[in-house]
Image (cartoon, rainbow, N blue to C red; front, side, top):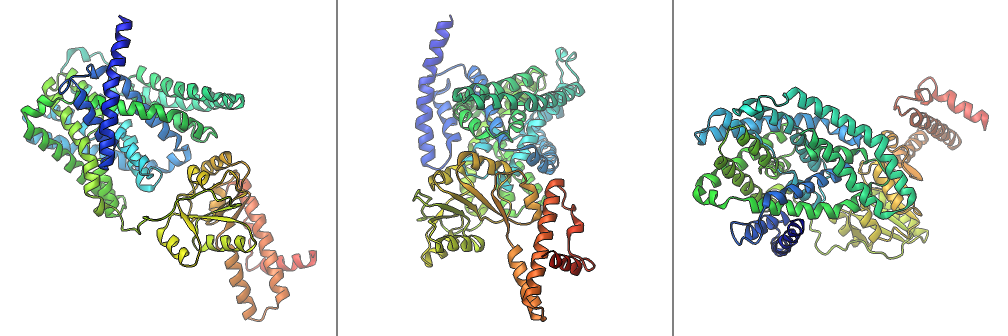
Length: 593
């Protein structure tokens, strides 16, 4: 029996993978994304069209591990401090989105059907959730997951994952099934959630980190694969045993390892499993699509899918405007999260078990969710010119290449230009990288070759020759790199010396402990130069100006050291020049000299 089952499993996968390969290539070529290709492939090989593959429910059970792996990888990108900074979007925007969309869609379902209010709630609330499995890969492939727009989308998806417990509780409270009377109350599920998250945090700090440190010391590459998969599956299994979200457990485990120096190793090892299983998930969704339900009620299914998309897009877009997003990004966010999600299937099954909806209703609204998911790539493609800010074309711009340069200058704005030209003036070979097409074009007019690419990415740096470079000079604007990102760069290129342009003292405090040879505050020297010119203009002689500058720099260095030690911006205030202490500090320095 087991041999027959294994043979059947292998036979099923041949047509599944073949169809997936064909349709994903087609839809990628049409720029509609892989998700739609997987869905169509699942429909074609599934029981309702060619009938080459069956038992979609069993395959869905395996494939849901792909969502779990996806959330683990996302957790690796979010350190606890970064996650804490997102709390307003998670618990503010996320809560409002789930609540308002749930109420609005419940109203739509109740208005256009003959369902009771409990049944409309059991259908409307799950439809408020979006597809994490679809949205996050779209953000990752576009390189937008770490942007403010991507973080806001992820914050909403994370709260949706957290809301599974209260939604299950609501369905259980509305249940008409006598068997549900003895089920655990909602407060107990909430307590389980808190205890499970706390336990995973403690396990991450006191078990997982020492485990990966031990594996790193042993240098056994394949052990990272085993340990990474064990971490994901064990955390998911704990949450499943408590009746909670498996994806949430894997996400917490990922966050606990986000500050680990082995983060990139884990990402590389787990990513192939994630890609395969997530593809299988969407294949299973396509196989489960009830074409007969659509054929019997095509107008209702299509109309309800369009109503779902419109309702969520409007509500989320208006909330985004309320939270200060520009209208283009608000429109993009509303459309990106307008589809139904994979957790809808789970909650529809709960509602069916609770005798709130009939199996036919679960099939029809399952088709609504699948259809809405299929529209997302089309919507994003059709509205691109309205959503995206006008930008200079990147056509014809060369990506970085290894030309043996001793120094890589990342960012060729007003700061990077001076750094790069001075190095060139000394005869040091330099590779220049920037992301702004206008800057690259302008530099070309002056005979400077600047490559197009994101110089904060390790793969970009490697293509530019960072493996052999002596200097990595990050001259980019703002605060685009976290300490964990700099550590990853140093781990990838240990022989290179790193220098950072920073915005202010707070930036230096934020980057404390990062493996950087030196920081340069972008306006310090220019401000000192202006002060020198001002003093000369009012008659101060050159020697006095030199002494004042030296005194200021010494006090500034002393104050910065105290701030770094205390991790407090207000530390070392007594080391500042003031009206009373200015001349005394300068005179004291003069006597010491």
